[in-house]
Length: 482
Ligand SMILES: [Fe+2]
Ligand SMILES: [Fe+2]
Image (cartoon, rainbow, N blue to C red; front, side, top):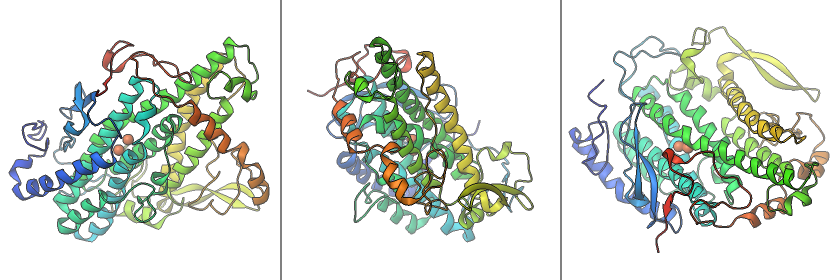
């Protein structure tokens, strides 16, 4: 145990980084604090800032018992700076600096690259809060509303995590970047968030569940890739963020699962055996399975764009510089420098995809993306189990990696969800079979009603299997302000 493990909750900014011993940093962060609160009031959950929410707050970084639960008004949430414990004598596990002691300060030659990576990660955190800010008004239950707000406050904390690194290690540039993180706005034409997926709307709860399943999972992969960074403060920060990220993905995965559960229950109850009899299913106020497939196609493809091109010099440089590794870097059985290794990349040859070996160092992005897809496949398998348990003849399939891409090598191609390369005109004519059209989106929106009676749920979603922190089914997770 190091001396940094204890979280100081007495100061304005809770932390386990001994903030009080660095007065100028503490002052700089205390100056940023009111701007953050102002951003939270302007752009955080709309209409619920006075409600008492049953939230977890991190009280330590020990994997056992790191959080406590209790009612908090969100603007009073104790956002803090929490790093995983320092590993004494930690060595850099990959890249050209493999084997050297992990850096406690930013190496001059990597300053710009590190700052950019931290800013991009930091920008996604407030962006998702902005995307989700109106969802509280249509929450399908108090349980879901609480989960939304939990995710939102923790994304706020992730912003704090990145801002701490910028302030502590990047001087004036870092402070400027920290200000800009509060100024960009999701979806704003003049000052958009940096990455595309974080400028999309999250207009309904199915979008929220899909976002937390698939887009927060991209977050997990990015954090995992940074969790072994040679820059030790970044590695320790992202490790603790991953602890919180698990719940976000849980909210997504179980959310979609509950939608499926409810749809299947209704189909069974009304003897609807054809999943494509959409109007028969919709009559009962639930989401038909083909529309779920289309929503998934959309969210997966938009999220895959976040990985960038399969072949990437930036990613190669970040790996070679020992800044950003691969998923589970330390568990991979190779030289961790990729001096002679190859990696198979999907390539279009005469309108057919084939795998072609490329130098592995150039394919670090492709590998992270493939690891992400493997993770998603497992999630979709758990959803299909539910459908199967009702004896309904339908499976959800993850769309092909090259389907509906806007960024990277596949963006020029017209690819079906199954991975066939077709003519652009055919693709355009058929896209409403693969992606939600306006009618689908309007139908989903029409289901969104606010259910605020404890223990009650909207028509289109089943109750969860268990409550938060062992609470009973009718627990009042949010005490709405009068
Ligand atoms: Fe986050
Ligand atoms: Fe998250």
